[in-house]
Length: 140
Figure 1 (spheres, rainbow, N blue to C red):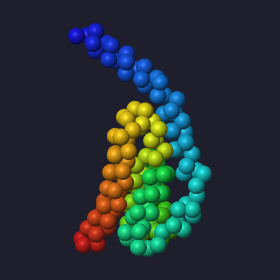
Figure 2: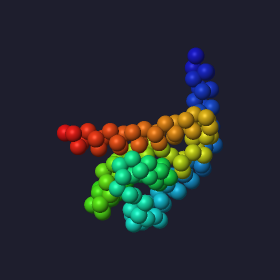
Figure 3: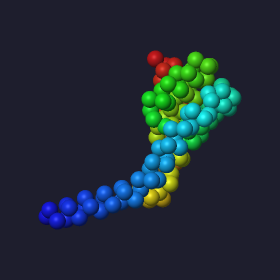
């Protein structure tokens, strides 16, 4: 029993070791995006249309993946700059759940089909969550 566990652990560590350079590269690339792309770049894309803003927010959030803490700070700044709550909500949800930048690592670790389905589903749900959240906040 322990030999199978040991073999599985060794296989897992070898797989992680092979993926480590790709994971580190993705993390470095993702951490550079908030520094390289200013807020003013994002702001010019939004139109004050809830549906269009949620789609645009999801697209920009998908490409600009990062940590949740960073997205909350950016979201607060976007709201201060006049972006709609729908756009900011879609941006934050997509930022955290969709990972265009991490796709190569996901392909390697989880498989191409699963990674594409997961990202597409997360993208659609970012739009839906943004619209429902803002609707419910306006009702309450």
